[in-house]
Image (tube, rainbow, N blue to C red; front, side, top):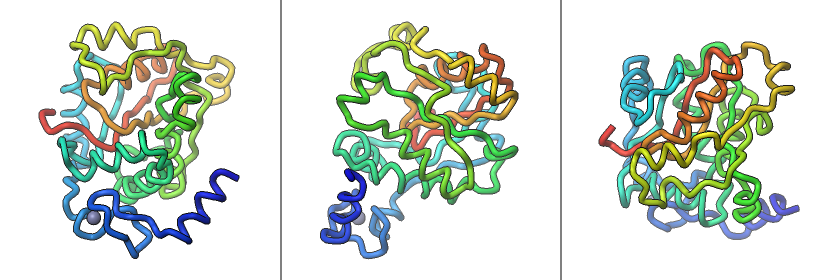
Length: 234
Ligand SMILES: [Zn+2]
């Protein structure tokens, strides 16, 4: 009912551009001018290697791609903020579709990987009401013809928010260490299927790196990483 009501409200009150606040007429959540401000990152094997090499921790991911460059005050920052903190879960699905359009045919989707949203701890999920990474996965899945799974990877500890906190690199790694676990029964049914971890924003990569490592330890040999955005220093 919650989502049906949301769809009805969209008809009665057409969405406003997440970038500039003007009404959008195309069904997109960004107007054409704000869309043109997005800074796409290359979706190539060379860029994948560069992303992995620049992660703060050595992790066992086999590939990693990022959609757009993230800057303070940028359009993509406003999109991610809307999706995470303004209850605009629809923005997550739309961003997932936008990213999916660019990803079709890239190396990241070879072998039809199973999409895995980075899980929220159940208490945080109750506080926010939804996991924004699941909505990214829904959009990606619809656009790319893939499946997503919200049960394989679990978050055991309620960790401090990575982006909001001012932890240094070692503190961040300690913060996420042992925070994730794999559902062993579910893992058995998946065999050696390639996995694609999905998150909104990667800063140091400590969180998503910890997820990749726990999946590799559970026996998955091809664990890939996808994020909507990443700061340009990488
Ligand atoms: Zn706009």
